[in-house]
Length: 231
Image (cartoon, rainbow, N blue to C red; front, side, top):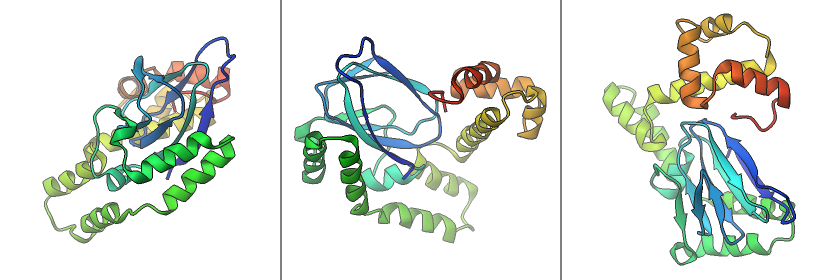
């Protein structure tokens, strides 16, 4: 798992809070512990929300009074848990939940603090059966003699994107990490160091995935010390 988290916005807060979720090919499950939440401008009243594989950075806006908990899965893990992938966030009403998820949601809603929610999520994760993901991964490794097209189909079944698309996302993530560590680096040198043909090529890829340019991202790093950024 990439992360387990619990989050809230004080009911007395004067304004909503916006957080940027990075493009990292990960997927998530969110537990809505209040009446409704707003994500990317869409209202969700469902109690459990399955997020798709993240291929572009995007904003999530949380209204005052929001109470959430969730798990973020490494690439490919979400398929092993839910048996399918989603193009858009999928909200599940309480009547749609299986017994295990329903019990978990109720327990999270009754938890008195963030720490207790995280403990409950951790225990739930310990009991998950990830044999489907493991089997698909082992098949991919043990059958390296299969054609490239077959390998790509297996990869896409697990992650919902092609290997090439994943490589693009991973490369931009490395650029972001480099900019956080060295915000004053020359962008032309950074582009060549990460295998881009030139700075313009890197900028196009960066903007498509992160939704801002490397220069804008660098300014955000300097302003926010790397916090609350698009990755």
